[in-house]
Amino acid sequence: MAGGGPERTGGGHSPREGAAWRGVSVFQALALGLVLVVGALVASERLATGWLILAIQTGFLMLAVWRIATILISGKPVGAPPLMARPPGGWPRYTILAALHDEAEVVGQLIERLAAIDYPPDRLEALLLLEAHDQATIAAAMRARRPRWMRVVVVPPGVPHTKPRALNFGLARARGDLVTIYDAEDDPDPFQLREAADRFAADASGRIACLQSPLRIRRRRHCGHAAPFLDRQFAVEYAGLFEVALPALTRLGLPFPLGGTSNHFRIDALRAVGGWDAWNVTEDADLGFRLWRNGWRLGVLSRPTYETPPGALEFWLPQRTRWLKGYMQTWGVHTRSPERLGLRGGAALILTLGAGLASAAIHAVTLAWVVTAVMVAGVGGLPPDTPAFALCVLILGAAAAWLQGKIGARRARIPYSAADMIAAPAYWSLLSLAFVHAVWRLVREPFAWDKTAHFRDGEPEAQEDAPMLDAGRKAA
Image (cartoon, rainbow, N blue to C red):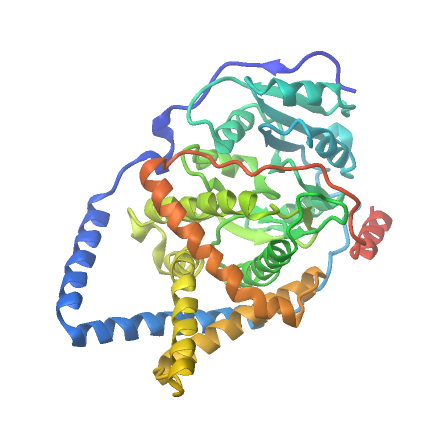
């Protein structure tokens, strides 16, 4: 176990360092004014309203086509590649950063999992970044049996009180050539760091700054905080994103919003772009596009990190509210100077964050419209008077979402039954509830961090990736 007490060092970050801290640009103000003018004209002209509705329907039709395209573009998964015995020039130094807050219950579990990572110990360091006031987590971390390469580092008080601020504090003290981040509930594949090191070594261009590991939701059998409906839908949502959408964007050479964990970086690239935006509550989403704007590229790995779902609505809703609020912040940051993203980067921003926000905004409205039309038609004894094009868009959109989820679930080896598909629109409608919360929170508390509660796992479900782990051990 590492000796001595936790490290306490000074420092911090200026509030002006975060891009999300800045206000609206001239371009955004002009664009907002134009939208308001067009909205007023549409409201006064019935014909214009019809054209606007048609434009919105066409946009969502294109989104459905894009979802189907991601399935074809992402290709068939080929499994984990064989690991090098030793990359040219030797194994690079690797730093693991884990920013933890109010995690006394799970910090010991995380330490056990990080200690199981298969990487040369003399080339590895891990920094557990704990807040100065969080004495319970500090005490739990100090009691746990830690490998020598793992240190407890106390982040001094400061603003904003966010995960990215703590990560930037750790980044300034990291000694690795490569750096990755993990969250409190993570259970990474033991060979994930080796795969990332191999991939960076094989990157002849030197332009890949970050590799994203797939995040897979693994439910627990004996967990008092489980919510079967939300857990299953959340797992499928993750599968569609990490097993289908991100591989497709990678094959197209486009940027994408990073996941909040298991990002592997070249540390020089990360430092060159200023690290994480401490004022953005989805610093991961922002960073993917900021790397792209600065000439870097992204990729994906095959070895996953397992996570548990947030659980019941009281835990799911604040997390999703923070995500959507952060997506709005990120959208605002990268549309201040959209020319810096270029056409391809701008298209990726629209297809990921833009589409996610627009979909969340209208899911509940769409479901309410469908239910109301059916009920009114049923009471009146008449067939629903539904525009054919609108109905086609609705059916194709739902089918594309179901198909992407089904393919992603198969690749992630998680169940997705017909009952789950039927229940999916109810889950999608909850996104609209989170969207309304996010708009309100963006106005009232734009930089407040709604932390997700984590609980120690119960007994894990059957591990279906055991062959991958066995193959990795043999290769290593």
